[in-house]
Image 1 (cartoon, one colour):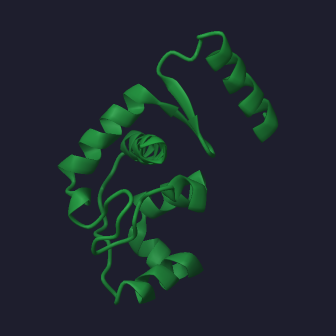
Image 2 (image 1 turned 120 degrees about the vertical axis):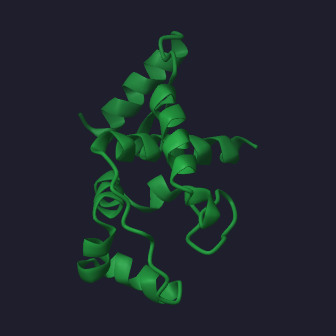
Length: 130
């Protein structure tokens, strides 16, 4: 389905009240249940120690990260951080920018990664409205 078609379908769902717990953030159709689980995974792993939304701490600001990076890149990053740091030009640039402080290699299930992406998209969307 094209991006336009996704937006059109999302618009129809919202217009007719069919959206339920689903909202659209650029590039990610946010599922509120997954986002809630993502927030739990985010907090459980201590991501908040280095990351925030709308402000930079010791690591990149996560505000609109789902707009800056595509979902495949984010999935690879969260699944194999060390591998990305060794091979990906964007990851290498971040390593330079943040004084060679590496994000830990978490052992996240694919479902946890998906949930975190939904949480980051939802939180960015919430911050835009604030």
